[in-house]
Image (tube, rainbow, N blue to C red; front, side, top):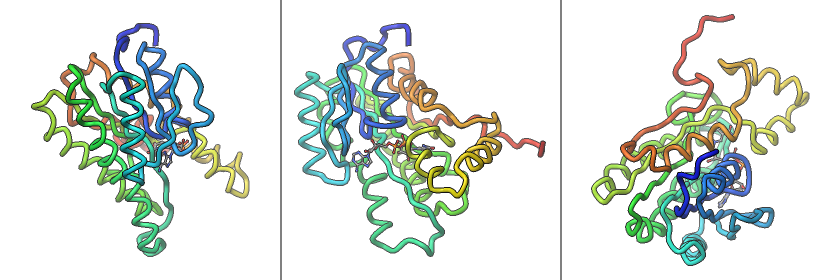
Length: 251
Ligand code: NAD
């Protein structure tokens, strides 16, 4: 980012120590914002970003981390609810405990972090929340029943939060990434018999012929979080190379 339109703004990014969250935290800082990263593993977070240990599945941890971030930054204008975990399989494959674990991080984690941040966001003249959702929210992906259910809930939650808080000047949007080249996808590829062949197959399935870069998702998140999107609320922005919207003929 070359402009400094975020100068003076204070941002919190959950899951900001890796992948999409890391690229987002860096881009916010490049735009002039002061940024706190809340993550299970904040040890690798480098200045000027502030790393704070937090588990979005634990209410006490979230409350104390959000308060610490607000104290460090002097308030909160932007909340990026990005922390999330995956789950593979059909509806028959995951026991209740796994459903509860994934929903607790991906869905309740957003509610929890937002609840803790709201008193601070209400004091901001330009408050914005961006949730990291997924094309899985609406696409009907095979072998992703639990993950898709969690992201469908994130999409619905985004709309409900946007409606609840629009009158108090807090905007709420989400991004729906496609397949993004992050350590998460790296781990999935590494587990395949032939990781390089699997990567090529994955790239070939993308309409634009490659994986989405984490920085491209970060750019969308930062746009939605910033003053340039001051009239944008209750939307989902797909960053997926056309995966969710296009109906291409077979090559
Ligand atoms: P990643 O694994 O590279 O990074 C996730 C980060 O979240 C890590 O730093 C991890 O420590 C942190 N985290 C995990 N659980 C946490 C918890 N309970 N509390 C606090 N922090 C926690 O993943 P990524 O690919 O960058 O994914 C980030 C988000 O993007 C997730 O919500 C994911 O569902 C979503 N997403 C990813 C893709 C993709 O293809 N990578 C596609 C669509 C959506």
